Image 1 (cartoon, helix red, strand yellow):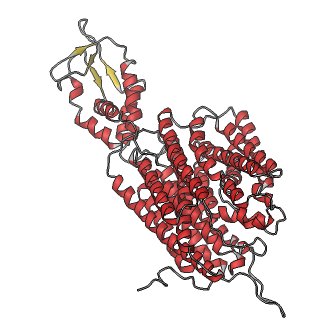
Image 2 (image 1 turned 90 degrees about the horizontal axis):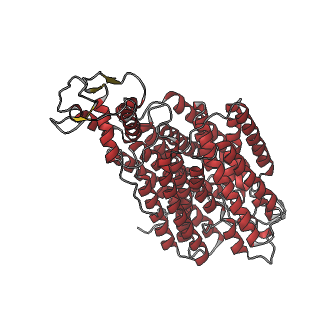
Image 3 (image 1 turned 180 degrees about the horizontal axis):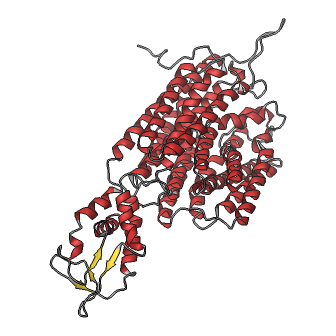
Length: 613
């Protein structure tokens, strides 16, 4: 029962949290009161994403002590409170408070759902990854859907109050079921992951400051692009700390965050009905197909390929590259069904990459990658906005505006594709480097490649029983510990004392450092036996090679994680009213003149088509 309720909660809460991100106030700009600064109100409406991405790492740290059901219920309560307060927003200050409140609530929900599904049935983690990828893909469409023929701009502050109530009820049922079943223990981020999670908040704060500055100071396109590119590089640098498996997940999260939602949002805007596209009603079939395929692919990977992250992760990212290439070929399109191709490639690729890499790491590393993902979303929006600003500069007519907007989408697809390929190459190169940084526990499944021998060798001496053989010594001898070659050091210690502490410490570190600790343990096996000769009274360790290697791996892995801290995005939105934007335009009747905006040409103009030779 608990898994069933949790699965329903994931399906309801994840899209509700991610739909907080898009800034849709410009779509209902004509409904804004005249006594409010419209530009300032639009900037304030975009505060939800910075609040969300700053909350995610802090909430992950709090989940080390707080229980996931409590945090999940609290986050959804904040979202419900923002829905209720949105109906009373009448000033820029109140709008800002409501959006920040909603962002904080969504930021609590996202890591709480991840922690909640972590120790449960394997299919739940796959469901989380699939719904997460679908939510990023359809977030812009879901945010625009309630605005069809609305009469109040405040709907943007409370888009789905009914869904919020359902999710809040499910969270309450989940909490009660969790308490009735004896409060089943759930994994949380380890204390060693705390510094890295807090470190992830630093570039998130920097990107938020940069994005707010670009929106308020009227920066030009080139500085915006350069700062956004710097932010992406900083996130990749931060993702490079830790073991190889940790880096693979972090790189995948950054790529998915930077590319998926910003790309899908631009495609959705181009395909609005007011611009000649199929409208949102024509996009739900592609969204549904992509979502089903994404969830199905995630479940297949989780159940049948539990240890294939090393090759499934780049394969998933390559699927996203192909999806971006298809965007350049089929968008814009008057037929919404053809968009199932790029949407499915993007969603399935993201779901496969995330599911495969989440299987290799512990919950602390997963929460760290999730923090980088949403910082990447804001960096991606910032970079996409810079490209739009460059393409739309100097347009003189409505048709030029539409053509330039389509050209900006094609350029963005090209940039996103090259960025994803660069991430794949970077992950392949960094996989050859020995891991340094914070260790992390596994997920209870098969251990990562290279970490098996080290983790088992370090952990076994901590257990009672047959891995340590203590032989009765003569009266003049005590238990012997390793010393320098040819030297014996006699100490008095209980059998479960030093061996247990050494084993526990070595096992924790060796689990994250993989083959490095295991290899050193094999090479140093002779050092731990008093010059290679065993004598009566010696403490004979059955796993002495692994223990010695794990101990030295602990000393080598004590180096701290270092990295460089590395941005309300000024949205350039097409002048499309919510009236009629959700369906195809009807042909003009007799006696009517076509006074609507220009339609998107059947074949979009790529920037290379108009470039001078």
